[in-house]
Amino acid sequence: MYNAKQLSEIKQKIIRKITSEVDRANEDGLIEEILERYGIVYEETSISVNTRLMKILVFGSLAGKKKDFQGVLNRLGINLNNVEFIDDYSVLKRYPVDTLRFSTKYSDLLIGPVPHSQTGMGDNSSLIATIKSNPSEYPRVQLLEANNKLKITKTNFEKSITSTRYFDALNEY
Image (cartoon, rainbow, N blue to C red):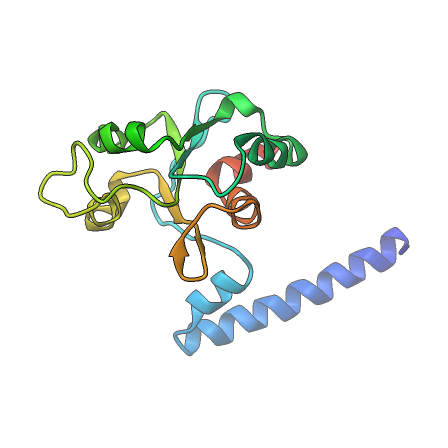
């Protein structure tokens, strides 16, 4: 273990190295690669997340038991009441997608396998197309994939949870 002085020196070296890396990437037009490498989502119009009022919505069929996914949340220190799972096919099909537009209830939307046709999508062919047509009008969206298909696994679920607005706000305090 390092003492406080050594740790401070290490942090300064890391900051200088990353700052240089970001500056070079920006000059070369590769800043998105840096953001992806460090798991950072930059949004110019960021919403304020109230972790007592807002939730994460997990929308799609789960590849496993819900209690296993809830175990991931417990391990990460997230109150189960602040994550809503909509994973039943018949509920997914009837869910009014338009209620997610300009939502203040959800900070993040994690999407897995969902029916192609749902209520409230307007002229769009799918939920994903609806959101992609106006992404700033919806909670932050992450598509959960495994083997190039929409699939919610415990592994990609945990990774996605830790890169949500909600998780960022929870860990700011």
